[in-house]
Structures are given as C-alpha cells and as structure tokens.
Length: 266
Image (cartoon, rainbow, N blue to C red; front, side, top):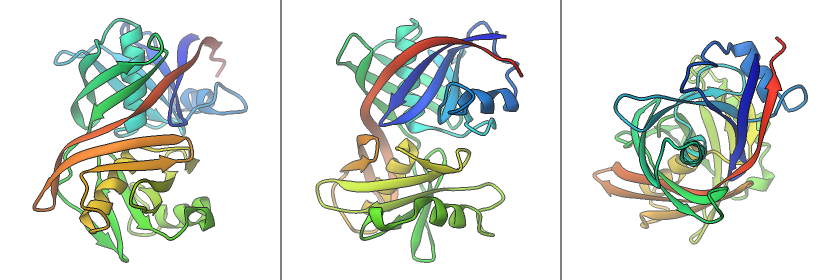
C-alpha cells in the first residue's frame, strides 16, 4: 500500500494527515500506524489523523496515537485537521466536524496561503473537576492530570509523568500528565502524553485542562489564559459558572510542513 499524506504541526505537536474520504486507508492496522509514526523507521509524528465523510458535519477526524491505538480527542490534532480539510476542499474558514467526543466548531484565520494559520477550535464542556493528592483531574475530550509546580524545567517529565500515568488509579485507561508553572500573563507547561508514552512539545487538550484548572484553583480570575509549551504558545478562553466550564475555545498557530508518499511495507 502506498500512503499519500501531509505532515502538519501545531505548537510542535506533529501529525500525519490523510484524506480517507474514499476509505482507501481504513485497513491501516496498529502495527502499520506505529511504524508510520516512528521517527526512525517511518515519517515520524505524535499521531495519525484520517479525514473522513460525516453525515452531520463537514468532515470527521479519526485520531490514532503514535502507538497505533485509537485515540480520544486531540486539540492540536483537531486544529491541524481543520487546516488540512480546508486545503483539500471539505471545510471552509468556518467549519464543524465530528471527533471522538462529538461535534466541534472551528475557525481559520489565514496567515500565509493556508500553509500557516491561526486556528481556533471549540472544546468539550468540563462539568467535573476532581482532586487527587492535591492535584487536579479533568476531561477535556481526553483525560488529564494537572500538577502546578514552581519551575517546569526542574521536573523530570518522563519519569514523573510515567509514574502518575501508570499508578493504580489511572493505569487501566491511562491519563495525560501536565506540569504547569503558573504566571499571571503566560504559564509554562510540559506534558507527558499517554499513547505517545513520552513528553510532547505541546498538548492541546492538556493546555485546555491546565488553563481551566488554574481558574478553578483560584490562581487566576481571567477567562482567557495564555499557555507556553515547548513547541509554542496557545490561548484558551472559556465561560465559568458554578465550577462548570463551557464555550471553551483553543486557539493558536497550525502549519503544513510537507506533503509526501510512503510505501507501507508491513
């Protein structure tokens, strides 16, 4: 099988985007997906996104983690999927699409002939935030653990993130782990992602979860929070009432890196 693809990134979170409207690539299996995402033997990416037909929206994004397993909602992946879908002609500058957690809306603000743009995506409502050992657990389309620290650069993200992700409470389904040094104007964040099982340069749902946790915990009263990941900056806006969060929007740059074709040999 020859796979035609485009490589995109949002805040350094990189993805293989595939037009699967004809169903040609629906037979991709976990072993093949893991190979394609491998940075030594494949294209290299944090995940693969298939763009497919949807009866109730402009398109559907089907996301797979780098380990080959089906993933939950991916915020940065969604922003890249929107830009890619615009380029293949299935989405407009304002669009709606289906993802793992339901229907989302999005808006594209073109910067450079749609090869790079600011893309805003609506996120799922957050109706419950739990505490675990003084830290925060919430679901923004994917499950997240948020821990506030003094300095993210002093954290061994892989070691500590892996320990939390694999403890008895979260091991069965896994959880993404975010370490956040909150500051008034912009907070630094580093994330250990399940499915990748490593630190990534950014995580959209993790940035969303961390912004909401900062508001919930009283670290900020603002409903617009800027977050700085290792791969770039993102903004999260939301409405809050009685510890319920809605009208959540994740915004930031997304860009096309290159187009390609690869023979799948396994």
